[in-house]
Image (cartoon, rainbow, N blue to C red; front, top):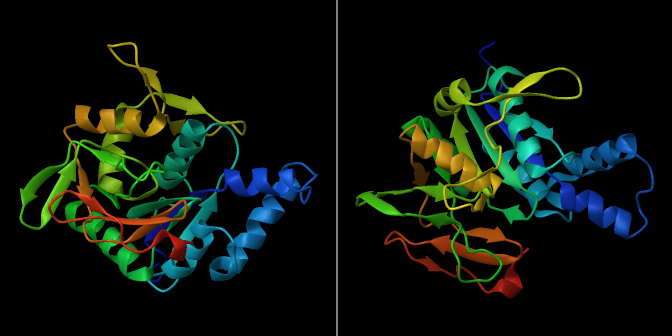
Length: 249
């Protein structure tokens, strides 16, 4: 249908569930966890969690299909979500937007990010500073032109991935089966590299991209709040604080 959403959005609210259990606000099993997630999906901009406020901003950009997953390891959850986008709920969508639970960005940044994925037909990332306030979420930054920066690897905090790129990776990825018998590409499967280093799911995914001759397209001059700290990637490839952290979410 012409008016069907073209955007598939996902988030991974592990911290929401863990926090609620620590406070004694959640005592049941999967059904109660799902009800809590649905509550915050409805709250959107009024939720205490950055990811759901980000989704409230995304409502202003365009219609989207939303799926949350807080079960299993993060590598499994991200891989299952890739399957849902590839051949599941989001099969009619052209872009997958993934938002981690501790990330906030406004509608202008989200619109630019989704637009970059569509323009390039590839993987687009909003870089940010990690919790140490010094390390960036991207590595191997290269200037392709005055307005175009790319990177070899990226954290998965706030990324938009085009179907063309996901399909290319999925064709080569090993397969896994979930508890309902659905097959999905293990795109975020962790592995040990040639130096016996254990690669996390985001670096492993970026390594698979590199093997397929793909780079991350970066969105510079895009303020983003990660774990309460505002930052942005400058057009020269450096990072700077965008606002006082005290104003963060």
